[in-house]
Image 1 (cartoon, rainbow, N blue to C red):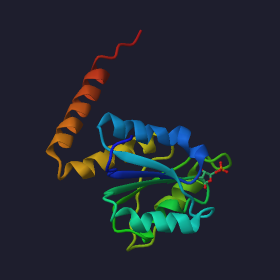
Image 2: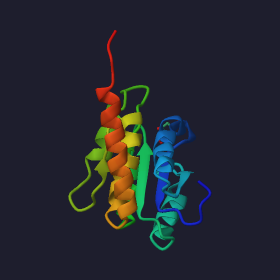
Image 3: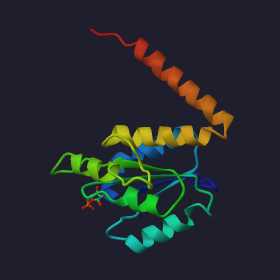
Length: 163
Ligand code: RP5
């Protein structure tokens, strides 16, 4: 989204995560939440990751979504370097189907929280919805959009027919 002031950062450890993480971006877009998406890795670009996260609060970002797979340390490293809420999305990995990513994202030591979502696309979508809910605390118009989203979702399910 090309808007001036991003409120949410969508970070991912590799471009290979984008196919899944674009669901987070699309969901934020649906709510007109300005955001930016970046590839930053806890392991491959450690200095750039810390520099980005260190500047995030000062740049007006309010929530960070961090996705990674395998030895998925990105969300934890991000959380260690910012007071902003960090939402972790474990990517499905080829070898262990994302169980490795889930455990390495969720098992944070007490004191440095990462709100961990489901593995893969549902987690990407829900991380964005949770970011919207966090932002909605101070933005009544976003809360109303969330209410409308839920109502629309409910109506859609109730209209389903089985042939
Ligand atoms: C992690 O390793 C990334 O988040 C990705 O999910 C996984 C594999 O990365 P690539 O080898 O595809 O770049 O750091």
